[in-house]
Length: 326
Image (cartoon, rainbow, N blue to C red; front, top):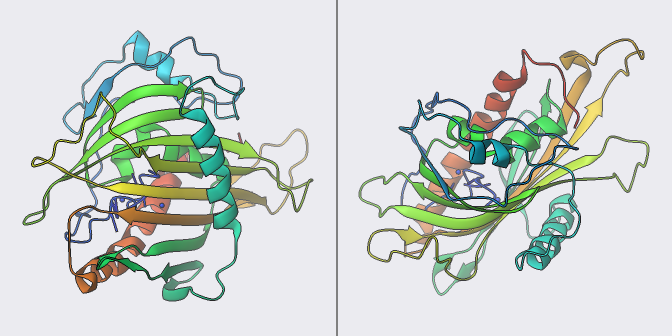
């Protein structure tokens, strides 16, 4: 999920998830980068794919390297990344509203109240501090420019379950609770315990969609992925107090392709001609209590690591493949 938990203070590690989504303030959730090699349980689905599946409970752990792909899993992989027709699922009104709210928030500038805490080339990291009852409730924001990949490729790697073990290094187990729609999935994730902190879990929906660029109608479309924890327990993943500490997150990543040179009709777009602009925001309540100073020390160290890990993973994943803009 982004646990810096998407996200990552837990910033998908912004449901998000951001490794920052799972950032646990009382623990260092990011371990040394490790790549989990396991058979892809999903195929990268693009706009226009059809799926008759309504979703199923599917649990994936870091030990499932040799797990074969079932028909249900293939159906889940056919998720379209275009905004779907209005689903009838009871979660959909919240998904629609929160995604648009977070998109607006991510596109806003970093004016009064924001403080930059790290910059490395094109990557800039900001924080907006807030405490509630002595607990850190900071909001984190990152802006970055990544060469050689598109907005679709970046967002797709963030959303699709098949890639998550490759970049979310704190992830121990991932369960697909339900397919809400063609472009929204409900997850339960369990993250690795880092002694002496308690182990964290999170239940959240993740939604991907493409939207036009309102400021430049002729520009490339914007891809957004939003992750958001459920406010209430889900019967398929009840809060196991005493075993896990439940984290709550809101994370959003907004990605847009910049094409520096449009090829002729007969030429394919090359990686040298594409760049991705990223804006990532996350707000995580890691659960439990940890001193504010410890929480902030962790995310100041781990948030940049997450961003570098995720972006480098996408570059490596896409570099030998044809450029995809949708």
